[in-house]
Image (cartoon, rainbow, N blue to C red; front, side, top):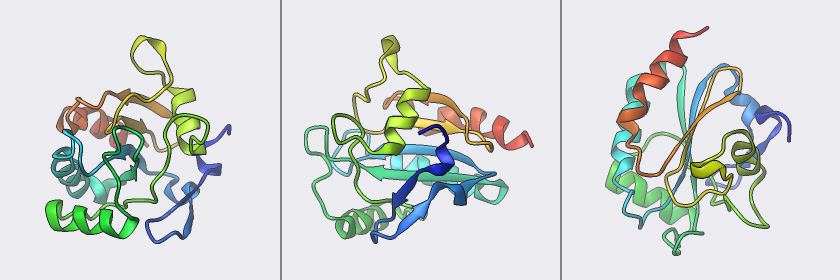
Length: 162
């Protein structure tokens, strides 16, 4: 996959969505889990989304159950959990694999563009974040422990670029 915008993902309702729908937007793409120690980051992700969505920012969440089975629920259960506990309004997509033989094409692309710690591509835990500019370039990869509010300055910088 040579272009982020050629990738198709599925919504939580299992409808196909082309990432080309997000052309011209700054994206923060996150693999999430409801039973993870980093799950409270949903609050900060939602705050960033609400604060910057009007200027072209989107958070795209992709639940993943590959790390200690911390996202065992159905798409409906995940949506309900995120709504009830964190009042999430950004899109939460269908559960995906972010590593291994069945890695989703989106994550194969993201990890090929930005390596993690020690130059490895493999995602090591939930809430790894990828920042994408308005042209679809993967600008930066953030570790799970990086709090969303620490990313805001990078988001604002990309939002100011036209």
